[in-house]
Length: 419
Image (cartoon, rainbow, N blue to C red; front, side, top):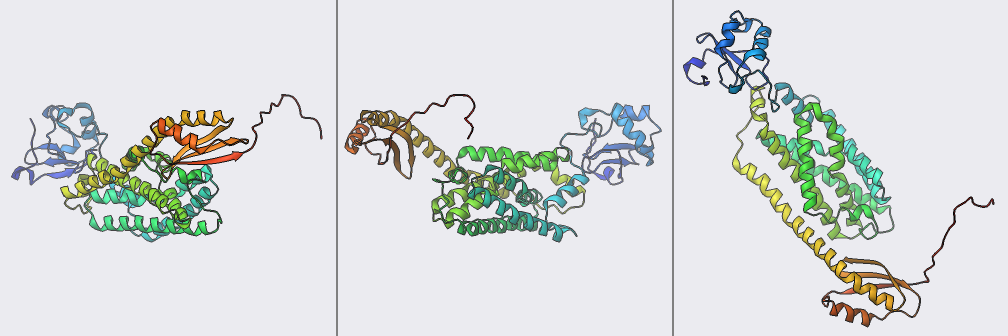
C-alpha cells in the first residue's frame, strides 16, 4: 500500500535526511510512525520490523535508515533507495544557476567581464581564421567563444518561468551577436579583396544552411544541455562548442556585409539563429524531462508558472526557421541534379573541339563552366543547342575559356641532383 501526501495526516510530518536527492527528501510522521519518500510513497513496513531501532524513525541519525533503504526498500513505489538517473539535487540547481546566469550573485560582475573579454577575443580569432581560410583558427575561436552559456541560460530560465533571466540572457545573446558582427565588419576593412563564398571556403560553408544543419544543431544542443544538468559529463562541453557554430557565422555575416554580399550575410545569420533556436528548444525539453522545476522549488528558488504558450512559441520558432532551411536544402539538391545532368553534355561539347572541362557549378542562377584548351575555341551556339536538346533550355550558361595547352609531366623517383 502507499500513502499520498495530502490531508491532515501530512501536516505533522517533518523532513528527515534519508539520502534521497529527490525534491523534498523524506519525511517522518509522528502520528503515523512511518517514514515517507518526498513524493508521498510509504516505505515498506517490513523494513521497520527488521530495523525497529532505526535512528531515522526517531529523528536521530539517518545513516542506519539509509542502509535500511538500500537493503530493503520497495522499489516499486519509487522510494529513496536507488537514485534515479534523472534525479536533480539542490547542489545541481545551485551549480546550474551560478554557471548559466552570468549576472547572478556576487560574482555577476566578474562573470560579465569574463564573458565580454572572451567574446571579443573569439570574434577577432574567428575573423582572422576566416580571412586566412584557416580551419584551425576558426575551431580555436569556437572553443573560446562564451555564447553557449547565455543561450543555455535562456532555456534554463524558460523552464523555471523566470522572466527576468529570460530577458537578461536573451538580451546578452543579441548584444553579443551584434558585437561579433561589428568585429567581423571592422576586420573586413583591413582586407582589400572581397571576402565572399566564391573565394573563401570558410564563408562558403556558412552562407547556405540546410535542414541538416538544423538536425545537427538539435543534437548538439541536446548534448550541451545534458552536460549542464549532469556534472559528471561536463568534459564534453568543448566538443559541443566545436560542433555548434555560433561565433563563426556572425563573423562571416560581418565580413560579407563589408564586401557587399548581403544575401550571403543573411544566410550566415540564418545559420546562427538556427543554432540558437535549436539550443534553446533542446535545453528546454531536456530540463523539463529532468525534475529541474521541482528541484529548484525545493531549493528555495522562485519558480513561476510555465504556460503552454511559452513552450508553443519555442517549438514554433524552430518550425519557422526550418522552412527556409528546407527550401535551401531542396534548392541545393535541384542544383546538384542539374549539374549532374549537364556534365556529360558539356564534356562532349568540349571534347569535340579538343578542349576539356575543368569545373562545372551552378551559382547565382547560372550554370558556370570553366573550359581549358587551345584555339580554335568551341562555339557557344553548339553548347546552347546541345543543352536545349538535353532538356536544359531554360538554364542560363556562363562559360569561362582558359587559353592554354595541357601538359602531362612525369617525375621519376630518386634523389634530386645537387645544386
